[in-house]
Image (cartoon, rainbow, N blue to C red; front, side, top):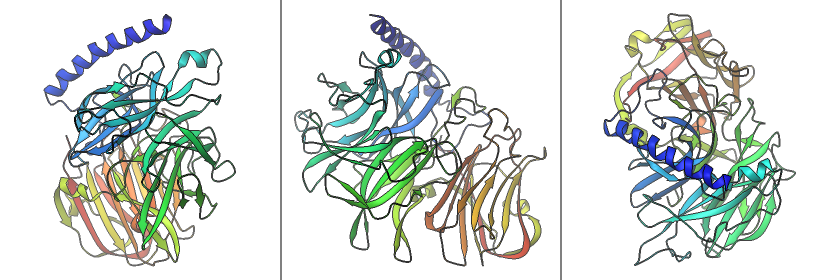
Length: 509
């Protein structure tokens, strides 16, 4: 009875808050607070974490996400919803799925059931089916270990409304504390659905003919990869490379990332519809910055695989110094296979659609740096968001310094002796809101070329670094007390910048 009352109150509060939110959206008030990202998705209000349920259908990209509609800190999870025609500009939609008597709505995925294997489709309509973890807080408080189960819902109007299956849960918990985050995809060879599920410190694979009945196939990872924390938010998909199919398994974990807290590791290998077999047991990281987590890909995009991540870290996500909302998403990134010699790696680079928000491009050209050079006169007034692309003739030490007249600075650079990139936010502005936020974070340089080419995408409170064709990436949050107004390039050696271009970007709102 208490649980039913809780959910009735939850729904009533939601209706009230949603009406207020809808009024603001109808006025096109996208939010313009000091740290509000201008080219990254954020909810208008309140808390957001993992992206989930991403599916492309009928010309629309759907982004669902973990959402607490009543607070700017983590709480009872719902599925928030946004949609986009170009994967860059987002429309905030009404909440898609919210709690019921089985629990709150944790992470999961969504698919287009083209063959109507579920039987949910009517009159030729293709059903979209969401698969998600339901978290029963009462069972957790009662110290039971079966408080997470997998449920489904379906949509017959292209994702605008959802009907929960009356046979939920479709996968009950066998008695494991962490049993969550189902990522489902269609395995064409055997004509069945594959569920990739995070099970404490490993991945379990399940299969189903209809999204309702699930059979366990195999486990992976108990003695492979990084195990500094609980495994979460997995993803399994194929990529074509040199005429060969390479299967990619993404595994997020918290804590245990290379720069602390939350992070994403990946494995490359083969998958036969039952078992994943990795090429190597070495631990590899998709992202080295501290602020890209729980990234998974859109389904139903064909051979193209596009991922988006949560732009924060569980070490401090509840304390970052924003007010009406907390946290957001990364730039969508296309995943491909790249090679160093004959060894394959997973590459992550901004989607090409980002070119649609270019406002002004300034070609700064070739120049030398020996000491420190202010390039702000070349870029013009420094207003985020912007993109800075540059190329060095050889691998030498250098720094890119973003700063303001308060002495706050963000330093992005390369250390040749250590052969690593770094982002130092120690003096970037507000850093004392949570221990562990301030610091210098590093990423190895995964390239044998002399040339260094880097792209920085800078928003009001974040920077994303891409280099070596996406083999090394870093995402970092920062919170200056005044916007950065100056860009300087620094080197203790004489460095030739072969080319540099500054691109002012338009707000997606």
